[in-house]
Structures are given as structure tokens and as C-alpha cells.
Image 1 (tube, rainbow, N blue to C red):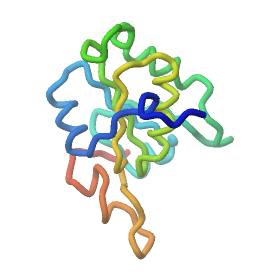
Image 2: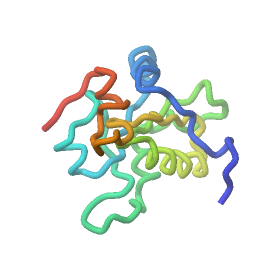
Image 3: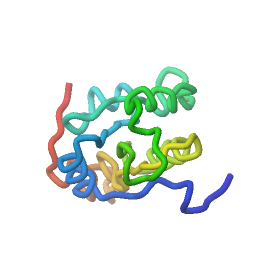
Length: 145
């Protein structure tokens, strides 16, 4: 497994991701957490859900790359990164989105980003999330089902 920066998605802060979505109509925010996290913990407003790892088996979704390809249609088929539809991945704390982004880049996607703080951020001293970072912590638009 290669660990070069070339096969890693570009990190964005939650604010940078929000600004990219607001300024680029081609940009797609994909929440890759489990269905339960997406529905009950909440998710960024306007995010599309495609789980990277999901219940009940908690294995990597074998159709993940194909499902993302369907979302961007022709926008992912491009020669230069600047002309590609930006795909922004978000998970809980930025770890799963890094791995999912790596899979997309290896599959040939050129404009892949990930929210480095995720939706809830890292754990604090009391083992709570959303107190140190993440989409919600920064007051960006989100919703719950």
C-alpha cells in the first residue's frame, strides 16, 4: 500500500469544504458514514449519503467507487483536476474519508477532497465529540432525521 501524497485526497477544513460547495455548483459533498450515523447523529445539509463501511457486516462497500461514479456522472471523467467535479468526502472524524478518498483516487478520480475534522471531530478529554472540531462544532448547516 502506497502512502504518497499523490494517492491521498486533499484535506479541507469544514469551513473550506462549505465554501467550496457554496462557490462551485459541480461540487458534491458525500457523507460516507454508516446509515445510522447519517440518519440519527445528523449530517451536513445537502450531503449525499454513500456509506464506505455500513451495518450489519461493517465491511467496505464493494460498490462504493461505482456509486460515487454514478453521482458525478461525466464530471469525474476528465483529464485535468481543474475541470473535474470536486468530490468532498466527510465521515465522523476524517479517518474513513481519507481511506475512501484514496480508493477513489486509485480508481482514477482526479478531484477528491476530504473534511479533515469530519462531522463530529476528535474525542475530547471526556470522550465527547463535537467539542473540539468538526462540521457541527464550526456551526455549519446540518440536519437530523
